[in-house]
Image (spheres, one colour):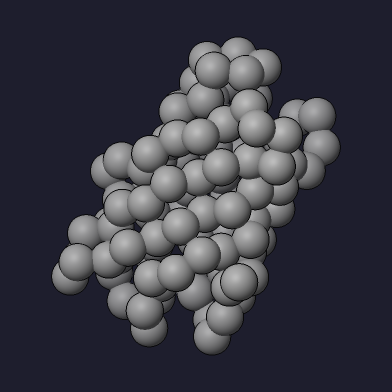
Length: 100
């Protein structure tokens, strides 16, 4: 299943859900792209992205409200994505997405 394209994400955080667009590109097992949140606070390139069948993993850095690296583990099913995000010392939260 191809992950390429734009995805609308809802990301769980300690202060509630945050929303934004994730643009993904794959090259074999390599995943890269960019995330931009709706508030304009985050515009970050993905790194350490990988594809294993329907499993996707990636990271990106944020600076607001604090500096941290977010780590994502998701699974694709048709035009939907679901999984978890690790938010540094704040724990893990749900993440969902739909293809735009």
